[in-house]
Image 1 (cartoon, each protein chain N blue to C red):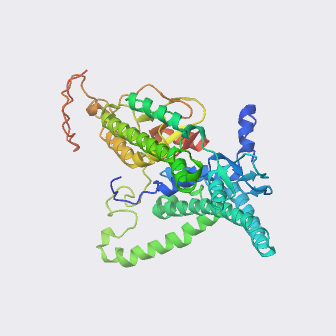
Image 2: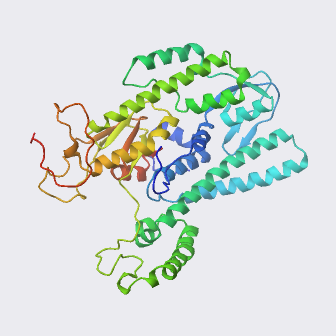
Length: 233
Length: 212
């Protein structure tokens, strides 16, 4: 579990070793649910958990047959069910996001690299091929010549405007564990520069107190989420 | 809240919020002996009769259902504490009292499954419902003041999980709409007239109101 370099204080280390895999999975699940774009696949965590789940599944079967107290067996089963639910839900949300933003993900290397090996295979073969084929046959071939591209609305579009992109502007609920100052909330990259009131005034950098929930634009805190310093809820 | 045009991936259902609440620890007093449980989510036990132990809520409920333990009421759920919380909640217009993040779910599960372990269960229940009403009313009124929020971030202090989940879709989209239509136009003049005109959301260029 120790992927960190030794920057943490003793307290952080304590928390790190006490955090169970299930809690890590719960956190990853929450992040994935709350974030508009797909997050990095937690390959190690999932591998460990899958291993543990399989082990427990075998044990439960054996126990159930060898006549161990059914109460104990049912408790183990409940715990197993809970963990499996988290795992399945996590994987399903990711698949939903992949299906929704398939063209965008395949076109953006950064996003594509966040997928697991199986997800990449899924995206390339089932998603892409099937979807393309379906769109071709049912709609595109029947449209006039200039409008037949999957990616562009028409041949004269400058960008691929038929590609669905995740809305990074959505507001998400988030929380930080340690104090975070100097978060730049406004960015000047979007918004044309017109003479109106000079886009949005750049406000003082925003601070976040620990353990308090905030509604913030996802784009502004994206970097912190990726570094793991902000949790989404 | 209101239906949305696209199936939003980021919505937690009420059951999922309850699922998360079920991991909260509380104290039980078992009436039997059981060996240590090495669960995926942690180790619990071994359990001895009459010796209190800390377990997650889902485990406590499971044991309670099979008559294997009694659940000790969490301190914040006592009649005195709740009455006091309700008082303070009613008095302060702005802030929310500190309550456990999952207080709604925890109390609901305990009412459903561990009635016998709660003294004055009806009082406790009605107190909690009152607290919920007062808090939610506060949330609703504070939503109206979002218009004044110039920053693109809103702080919600001491809100509980269920409450956040209820307002999340609405607040998210409201804040997004504010952001999209540009804050300069929405900055209210300090002496603007109280009756709120619905903000027109078309993108026609407007002459900026009085330069500050």
